[in-house]
Image 1: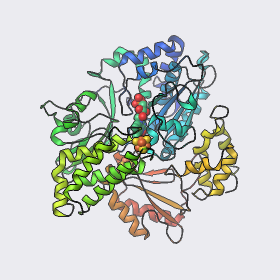
Image 2: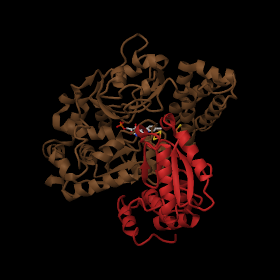
Image 3: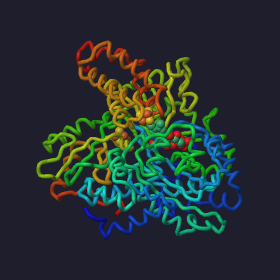
Image 4: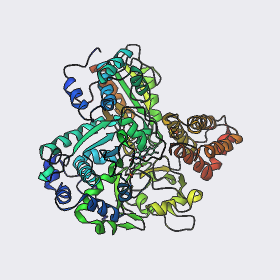
Length: 433
Length: 171
Ligand SMILES: Cc1cc2nc3c(=O)[nH]c(=O)nc-3n(C[C@H](O)[C@H](O)[C@H](O)COP(=O)(O)O)c2cc1C
Ligand code: SF4
Ligand code: FES
């Protein structure tokens, strides 16, 4: 059995309650850190553990904490990114719904390390029922002296609140999230300055993903060495993978980084193979934004090495033949899938979610959706295929935030690996599926 | 809606205390959610003006936010708003057929409301529940693995009980 850090107790009945969480050793990391470690020591543990951000970008967490401006004299904020809106991603909901105290414990540790006295969990508005579960857990934590004034008599005080979004994928981008938390439209800010210097209310702020934060208690309890001994290369620890699509066992799995993808797809411990005995056609491995890979390239790299669940292995081959670990949203497609149609749903998504600040993104996502619609419905031309590639190139790298790239990559990669399927739509003047 | 209900006021007051001095504009999204629920599921200009005055901000600051986020309805909706996810993972598992079923059964297209005002049909993007696709949302409730039979049962039930999906999400 693979090592479990986040989902160890996930099936224990009543885990969302303070009593059960506490009985299972919960809040021991807060006790340890607040009583025995300085904030910098907590940051040090996280830095040395090798933990990388689980929201998608994989940025080293301890290093990010190290950037926080401690000299400004302004309050500092720690914010949890629970926007979870990247198609294919449903791992954070799993934690928030079933183990809210783990997230709260991580929030206390991160806030302590950063010197924050007020922290927020920003959760997508659709997940109000999860917000209520977390708010209930927060109330329990206050009642038991783990939040509020003078936590466990250590002199450290922290207030923690939940904030709902309003339905906007872009608010997962951290500066858009901060705008939204200030009660504004979710328009990403131009960086620099980075949130570590100018964040929430103009004050130094760190934003981290739910899964990242939920990993902190284990690192503090077990030490950085125990954590960094799990995983492979620069991909330390475990990762939640939310698997969906045409597999026998969709769901949220915790894997040790380095697990062969073939094993993940076919083993009964994980996805349990392709449904109805069908053949694997393609996988979008890290949420809708990352390049799609055909079966042969998801199972093996272009050089024939087994492809592994890790930051390095998934990006092996660059954009020619690789992809990215991203958020861990693992979307599996069998041989009955129309790649063009699937891509059209993504293109519609990005068009819908573009905040509209930059013209390449605002216009380009609309054009891509329109052209894909044309091709899929049998009204496209061969020129349309090249036009799509062209538009995606013009968006990439020319926008304020990475949503533009996220919209461009799926299109470029689908055409790179499945061009024949686009051409077939044009030749037949209809969808062949 | 002219004012928050007596039931909601304590929640509103609790929310207003979650932000630092002078930053009460942060309460805008939470308050809009409650206000929408208490105004039959949509935000009228009057409702938004009320929120603006409560937060001591300009009405335009409320309008521009309300129009940005997809969960806020700026036009009247039916009693029960059915939101059907249409993004890739749900599409792979029959979301299009599911939408077609709702369309046929209710006799309306996505974005429309039935003549009797009972139902509004809406398409939405990924709800972060793709492992149990296809997924629909009604109010704060998620319904997952919704096949045609389940959809039929749900619709029958909502028809019968005159389902109202807009309730204060904090309650
Ligand atoms: C368009 C867009 C959407 C994003 N959505 C999310 C999200 O839903 N959740 C998340 O944690 N990070 C999301 N991110 C990444 C955040 O900007 C940020 O990198 C992350 O929250 C940092 O946390 P981490 O270092 O713990 O991963 C998104 C980024 C972009 C550009
Ligand atoms: S890239 Fe798109 S989403 Fe990002 S800021 Fe520009 S317009 Fe907005
Ligand atoms: S695609 Fe429907 S819930 Fe994710």
